Length: 229
Image (tube, rainbow, N blue to C red; front, side):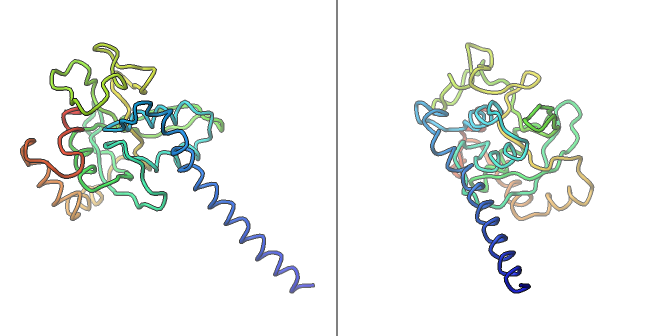
């Protein structure tokens, strides 16, 4: 009897893990399925805000929200493999200029650097299916009055004239939300030191962020920077 019970528990555990894995994979599948809905012209350049708007408008739980936001790059607008690791970094908070630490899921190394230099973090409160939650989002200023708006980005996704197009992207305090800063919180000193000394967020980003715009060719090149600066 004990042996049968043990076998039953093992089978149950395996089935539960398979179910959880399948559910996790469905987030990615759903984004792929709805790609043409999110990007009708198939142009995802720097269009992380389109993903965020698509996700925040869904009737989902906070857990769903978190999982969906692990699967796209807020800087490039490209999808990310479900098994990707995050980058630990800090972002300047709007108004206070405090450093907010958290995890960022990106498609390539330069995107972390661009995010750290050209975006700002803001705390946001939102009601999901399981109640109100607070979290930090990544934002850029309104780009709609730029004379050098990048021509490889669909301006209609972001702008209605010189105003933010709120039917296409989500705005918070006059800024465009481009993605989620996972596990966002006020940085501790050792966390700041870790980011500054890291081979990517420290050494590489210092080099990239001090390179003249016309000489950038890695990652999104100058596309996101022109949009966000």
